[in-house]
Length: 523
Image (cartoon, rainbow, N blue to C red; front, side):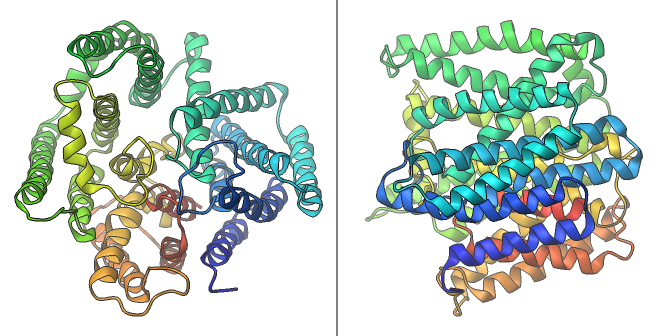
């Protein structure tokens, strides 16, 4: 059984679930455990559907469904946030965290119902388990949430249904069912929150930085959907289409995104951004430093393409070369986390929008850069980029940025959290920038003993844990906001569990690992 990587991955996820509930136990905990058990059984049905080709949409090949690991992310995230908000006495965000938890459970149950509905013959035992888990979630929801909060959960579920149909139809083979649950579920929640804030402008308050992500993300994704529909009826590779693309992007950006953000922050966004960027000398130094790193990354891409063009055979970037970008990203994020997290928040959102726009240009072959980007980026493809989109670099950015975007600022009055939670903003740097990079480099170059059923090596996992411990020690020395107190054992256990998950998961590790390390450190 332990030679089956899916089983071992499930055991690691169950271990994480039980670790969380050793610390956090409330009225939603039983539902969370029941949800994990039913997700384990439903995952087997999804895997059989993918292997037989019986799934309704085309999912990413050469990977299992990842239902269990994905189903637990949002509920556990909500529980961890709730525990932190209770400790700080923030009632509003405590209720908000409960909505997050229940929403994650409902999305997971919906995905389970889809699998059970299209499986033939009908899996009776799995249906009974899913029914018990679903009944428990619905009953607990009725007891814990108010009517308005239940309506909010249903709104997110409705957005999720329609958005799933659009994304899985337009983007075949880009996601596994689990990855689709995390990505589409998160986007659905952001859209619902943005609509809610926009309809209640009188209640809008807080830092303008917090509204930058939802407006820019939703606006950029809306732009992609519009172009995908329009280019179904017109050729995208002509100069006329290129002029149309750039004109429409400018019109939608200046005519929708900028006014929308202006309503929420009650200032002109461009003037606010200029004031924000020039607020201190440190920000100007950081911006100049990041520009140099961006130039360095561009040089690496151009150099690798030059080697391919001058070589006698097809040249493909090795694992070590691809990890150069992880190291560059670590060099980008660590100074930002230490000296100005708000600037890093805004810069990462801007970078995400730029990556999405460049991917639109590449995907639609918009002149003059579309074909050039195709040639440059295909060099760095791996087996996970099997769909029409190249998402590896976007997943890397998300993995590093999600702990910063999800940081519970209102529950941290002094800007930082005590104990292991002080490392929460560094979760992406530790899991992806340090752990995954070291595991890949040492595993591919020096590893000999492989974990049963996988290509990953024990040497890679061991050096990954050791490197992350060294990184934690460095953060303790140079970042005064990090103070672990007596939580060293918990940090070591969290890093080890997430490193084991990296060794066995077939999902996008850049997306999954930072979220689980974030959850474990936050509690």
